[in-house]
Image (cartoon, rainbow, N blue to C red):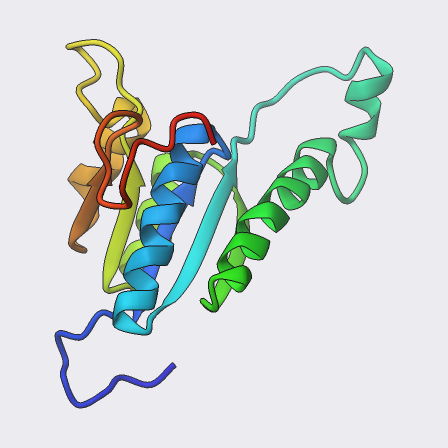
Length: 163
């Protein structure tokens, strides 16, 4: 997508997701913003690379070219894509492997991202509102950030916690 005449225009949003309900809520805010600014959305899901010994049949499924976690991630990301398409917004999904904070930061800083929409996950004073991954991302990303609380009032209207 080419930049318009305004270099400050929001044309590309990044929504990192762990596929949780709060991440879906952040995605819905991103869809509203994308419609407002006629922008595209990149949805990024990171599969943590964790070494393990395959002992169960489920673990053995994870040893193929496409792991069980990746298949589940792609299936759940399709719901995000469908919701964006239903709203008339261009959405592209990405799955990466590695440490979530590292991959999200790399994607945001190397890409042409104008705004990152992040869901608040933190539940205690130590983690803060972003949670451990979000806190690490915040320290590494130079892009503007739109933070969406996991519950409570929303810019989209009445709380959508039941969704």
